[in-house]
Length: 149
Image (cartoon, rainbow, N blue to C red):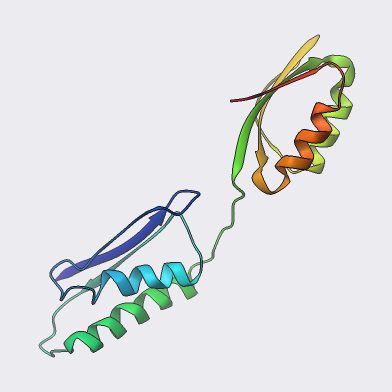
């Protein structure tokens, strides 16, 4: 029995690994990882378990079997896309709360923690795709202190 796998994790996609688990070199892990890469996925792992049934597949047959298995797994699993978030702390006076919340909602920021009193603090994740415009609008607000976490 062989447990062959491929995975790619992290926002930049630089953390990856594949294993042939005793199969000929490059015949299992690389085709699995190749299927993950073809869909441009991160934070994804695929493990294919192969039982030897008595038929020798040869290296091309193994490559095709592992590649096809990984492809079927990705086709039958829903892909969830999550934005890459950059965390910031916003500190401001309660009087500008509506303006701050309008910008947060407009740019689809994710609020992680909030403390609302006379002086308010919000820790939120700003999607990397909206970061520049969101920071520009927040920095233009008087009475708002903005810092990266």
